[in-house]
Each structure stands twice: as C-alpha cells, then as structure tokens.
Length: 113
Image 1 (cartoon, rainbow, N blue to C red):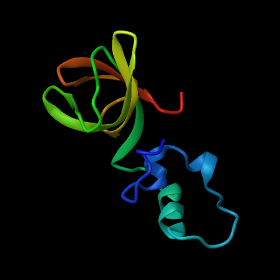
Image 2: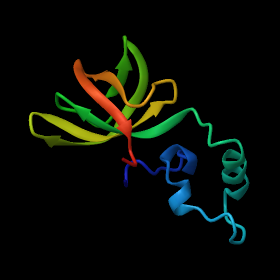
Image 3: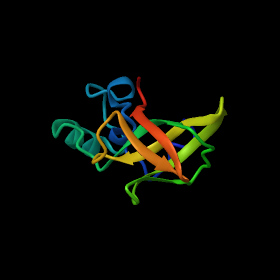
Image 4: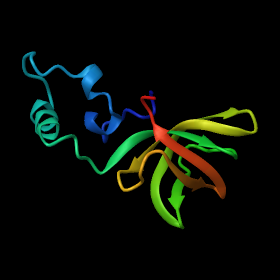
C-alpha cells in the first residue's frame, strides 16, 4: 500500500482506522480530524477499493461508470487475462460494484475483503 498512502490521503479513506489508529493514546498530528471523522461514521468522499479488471490496468487510469469518473487506479499488477489492483473510488459507487477502466469491465470491492 505504498502508493495509496500519500500526504493527500486521510486515514478514513483507507479503511484502516480500526486497525491502525488508537483513540486512547496521546496527541498526534491529525488527531482532531481523525476523531471528528470517526464520530461522524467515517463519511468521506472516496474509499480505497480492490479492483479486478478484465483488461490491463495502468496506474492513474480513470475508473468510470456510464462515462462518469468515479475513481482512479493507484496500483495494479497483471493477473491471469486481466489485472488486480487498488484505487480510490467515490462513495457513490455501491460495493460490490461494476465499473470500467480503459474500456474493460472491472469489479470493485472492499479493499479489506
């Protein structure tokens, strides 16, 4: 998950808060934001998702539904006749969901499954 964790990403978007954030330890940078989002149900605009595509995925490719951009691929590797990877996807896409990446069908699921 190296490419997925950048300075522009907040913990709630990664779905890692339950595994990687302590709410009982002392102060840390960003604590107020993390606590506020947690108290509001981690309702963020995008989430890290697992991608399984029938075609080749390239980092930076747009994830679309009916021609509308809903996300971006952040990492991908070949797998069989297609690709698997990770990307940030809009919360508007129900999970599990179907999208397109570079004209190929892609299954979008929870990254923690």
